[in-house]
Image 1: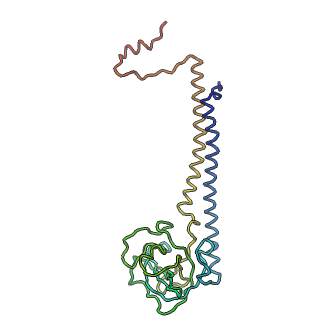
Image 2 (image 1 turned 60 degrees about the horizontal axis):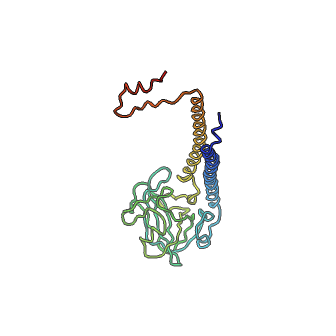
Image 3 (image 1 turned 120 degrees about the vertical axis):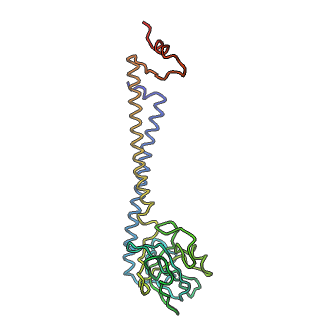
Length: 274
């Protein structure tokens, strides 16, 4: 009954199934490991941000460039405040508002973007507190430059003068005439009348859209493996039924008559000769 499984045609089908199932399982397991790795990264990053609050701040130059190990660490920098910008469409405690971003021009010549606080409502320069004059030393959490379109960072353009969608050297270089650090700092103590912006985990370490895509791909690959098994059993069952019908002398009937054919002639043709 099952000798057809040894035919060349079925050899090809069987080999495909035997290769497809472990491949789908492997890909599903790999995607699951990617999701679990992101979960572990998020836990590590959250623990790092929490522990960084208790550590003594270190000079900015010692913590650059920003990576997963230095993101969230407390740093200090000295300079004079320059241009002040607003970063709209930023959420804090479930409310929409904007960041007050001021560029700190350091003695080295480059400027460090400093988030001095958050205010609710639409971005309005009149609401933002003016930066202190003279030389200042700031202390806050070090953050990597943002990427527009990732982790809730707006990518829209056409903003009014004095506003920026993302806090990054690539975005700010078009708004100022001096060099910038490829990093930014959110102050431990916010400017008067504003709320301090908490440090965030480094990019690629949170349960973002990419993480849940990995989880979705995991399910898809396991579904593909099950579908391959289902189709193989269905093909085998159909082949067995065809073999059984042939053994009983039952031929499948084709009810599709040619266009323009005489129905009576079709009926006579289908009548067996006795």
